[in-house]
Amino acid sequence: MKKLSIVVPCYNEQAAVPYFYPAVEKVVAEMKDLAIEYWFVNDGSSDQTLVELRKLHDQDPERVHYVSFSRNFGKEAALYAGLQAATGDYVVVMDADLQDPPEFLPKMYALLQTGEWDAIGTRRTDRKGEAKFKSFLSDMFYKFINKISKTEIVPGARDFRMMTRQMVDAVLSLKEYSRFSKGIFSWVGFRTKYLGYHNVERVAGETHWSTWKLFKYAFDGISDFSQAPLDLTVWLGGLSFLGALIGLIYVFIRHLVHPELAIVGWSSLVCIILLIGGLQLLCLGLIGRYIGKIFTQVKERPIYIIQEKK
Image 1 (cartoon, rainbow, N blue to C red):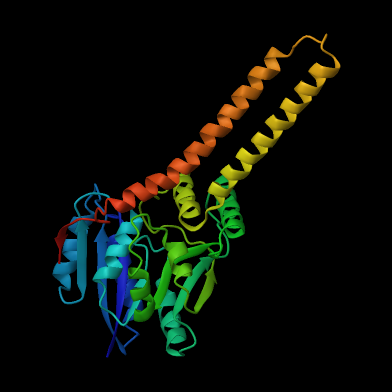
Image 2 (cartoon, rainbow, N blue to C red):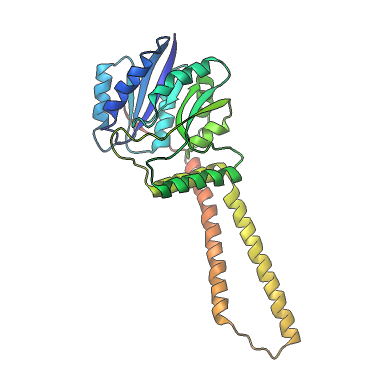
């Protein structure tokens, strides 16, 4: 009998976990040709999430397992830890808040059984219930990153996907510290089919993704899968140099033709200096971002640290 591993990253999901487990159990009970295992990953939650996971493990110690981090390492680290712990022939990643509909699991598995696909992903076809400004920023991010990156990021794609063991092993072979799973899932290739669905509200609890956190996450994705910001610094530097060179030639020629003209325009000169200085700082900041990622990677610190595992 083949096995399906269900990986569930959790951060302060005390209220959602008691709803998640029975909802998924109701669905997987119909998938009688599969053995099921759960891998919950407690990402350093500050509430009673770990207590709820211990209760689930005590109820079903053979199938329900959990990994608890020593602190909060982020969802990407939790997802990576769950994939490493999973032993199934197929692995599905889901959020504990039930925004990933469990009803999709039988269909995802059936599509994988055809042999035509290596992964079945999901994408939201709308963002009903979300703030319009946040939805606008998300749409702009997908449009922007797909223009500057060779790795296609499917708009509205969720981490909720079912993968074959071969694809999971390929994802795990990428050891980078800074991880952007949506890009990694696309970068490793394999045949992926996406199922669309309408946005689903959280079953309980509150979202932990503020607009600022999403912005930082988006910038990580851009810097991980595109060198366009570095190319931008080259173009800005080249244009600034060309503009300064043209200005220098103009001033020199004017001095030869009209030596009587006095040098005026101190205000504009100050503005130009500030503009060029700002461009230099921007370019240094973008370059520093990439250097910072290199610095973090070469230190070879672990992506996560486990405090408890059962």
